[in-house]
Image (tube, rainbow, N blue to C red; front, top):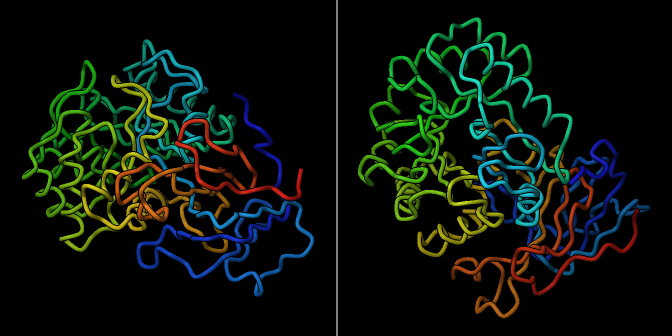
Length: 398
C-alpha cells in the first residue's frame, strides 16, 4: 500500500479528552495530562486542556477518554523491499503491523532477499539500496529503518566508513554471515561503532540456513550494541546464560515475540532485579518461519505484563521510549519536540479487566482505535485487534 501524504504536513492537531496518557518514559510512565498539541508532525504541548493552546486546529480529535501512547517501535524486523516479504510470500505485512500499533520498524538485516549477495561489494550495495528505498517509501506511513548489512569475513574498516558515508546506520545480525567468532565480530563491531553504525548480534541457536549457534561467550566478546533476541530466534540459550548476559553486559537487552517465551519473562525480570530496566527493548523478529505477527508487539507486551508480573505501563515503555533512546530515534516519548507518532488504545470489548492497563495485566490484548504518524491519522479502528470499547473521533480536519 502506498504511503499517504508521507511528505505532507499535519498542520495544527489538537487531541483532547485523553483518559490515560502513557509517556514511554520509565521514570514517569503515566502523565497527568489530557491534551496533546501537535504542530506539523511534532509534539508542541502536553498538559491539561485549560493550559494548552487549542485554538484553530487543522485537525481536532476527541480521544473519548481512551489511552494515548507513543507508537510502538519494533526493534527487530527483516524487511526486503516495499510491503512484501518473500519469507512468507505475503503482501501488506507492514500495513497489518500498523493496525497493531507499530509506527516504526528497525531492520536487523534484509536476510530474506532471494539471492542475497554475500560478497563485500554486493552486501554493501544491498544495504545502501535498502536504506535508500525505505527512506523514500514508507508503507502506510510506517517508518522503516532499513539497510542493515550482514557482515562477512574480509571486510575492513574502510567498508564501514563507506557504508556510513552512504547513510547506513545499522548492522544486520552479527552471526548470520561468515563472521561467527567473537574476536572477529568484536573488531568489526568496533569499526562500525567508530563510524556511527549500531550493531546487533544474533543470540541463540540457528534460525536460517547459514546461521549457527551464537553462545553467551561470543555475545560477550563481540560486545555489540544490542543483544539481539536474547530469548532466541527461535531457539534460546539456557535461562542461566541469558541471565548472565543481562548481568555481565551493559548492552541493550532485546526480547522478541518469535522467541522462547519462558526465557523472555526471565530476561525481563532479570533486568528489573539488576535495576537496569531501561536496557530492555522489544521486537518481533518477523517475518520469520513462524510467519508474520501483526499483533506481535502487543502480544509480547501482554505476555511480559501478565505472566512476568510487570506493570503494563512499564512494559509499554520497553516497546517505546526505551527503544527510542537506545536506537537514537526522535519518537517513542510523549514530550515536546518528539515526533507525533501515537497509538490510541482501549480495553477490548468484554475484557474482564476494568481498565486498559488492568486488561493487559490480565493477559488480554488491547483494542487499537487509531494510529497517527507525524500527526497524520494512518488508520482508525484496527482490523486486527479485538474491537476497542471506545475509539477516538476526528471532529474536524482533512
